[in-house]
Length: 138
Image (cartoon, rainbow, N blue to C red; front, side, top):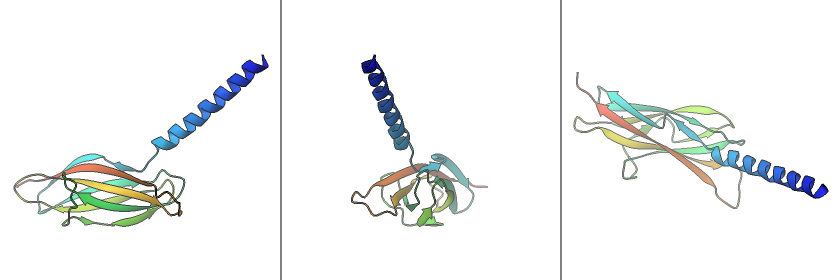
């Protein structure tokens, strides 16, 4: 009987540890919305997204814009390229993208996070959303 109680106690402890690790692994920074289509009547399209820090520590985020081939988009303008977020905080990011009459412009807006704590393993997280800017004529 004692062996059976020990077995159940150990099994419950292992399941609790696995559930805790799985929930921590599922947490990560997020962009909202992850996909959007923006229509503009001018020469510049504005993509607004929200960035959330679900970690228990403050994080530093680097924001970058890439084309569909993962090349940096040099003519994109961001409200902030680097920012800090407290645990659980959310902020808004605005990307201004020049557009032409020809084709819709698709880009990735990416946020890479890093901790303020110096560690031997430089763990970074990255999340990207895909956005399309379409120019319409009046």
